[in-house]
Length: 246
Image 1 (cartoon, rainbow, N blue to C red):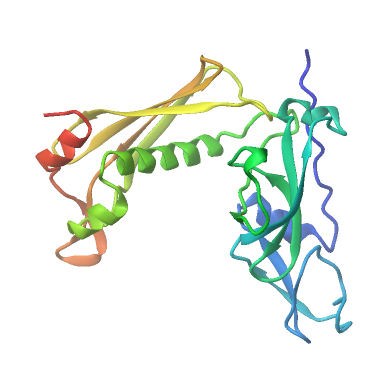
Image 2 (cartoon, rainbow, N blue to C red):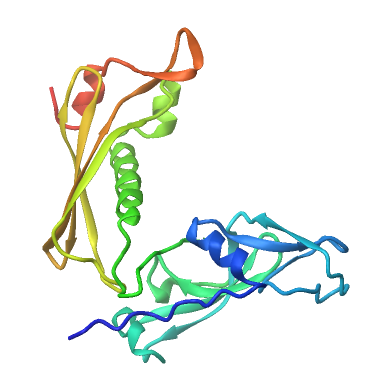
């Protein structure tokens, strides 16, 4: 069966800045220069004071759920693979309301005033996930892996490290991941060197391997000659043991 791509926005003079921000994973809103109120959707005039003067700013992306509905029969065939899914109205910290899909929990667990934050997803016109998304998932998976091993950022910083900077990364794409696919990222530390370690990632859909990736990371410390630079610290034995290496 041929996948049906989701509908794509058609940016115009009023909305182009909003959609370009989304492309950069940034939620951009208009702010009236007359009354200072933020507004969305974008428009040429303020709906409160009528001013035609405004600026754009990056919103926090945080808000709370106001109302929602659970969709069991999609209005468009492109969303059939997602059902059941929740569509909700969110009030942003800055004031405007946004409508979108509510993800990250079972629809039955939604409640009024649930704290949420904006997430961005990218697909090409054929509905295939763009490759930069996988590197974001790898980054999130590596930090989640470290947290579960007891080596999260708060622990590392208490030990004098600034985090787990990235030195190298790569991926081999075996099959396309499409809009609506439910995939899992399986990650593990696969090896250590004196000052670096390697994280292996596998992305699966219903048990089928879609792609494999890797990251090479290190324990970062401020450079003694220039605090604006980082250097790779020797990896302590205890850090290795947290990931099953002696």
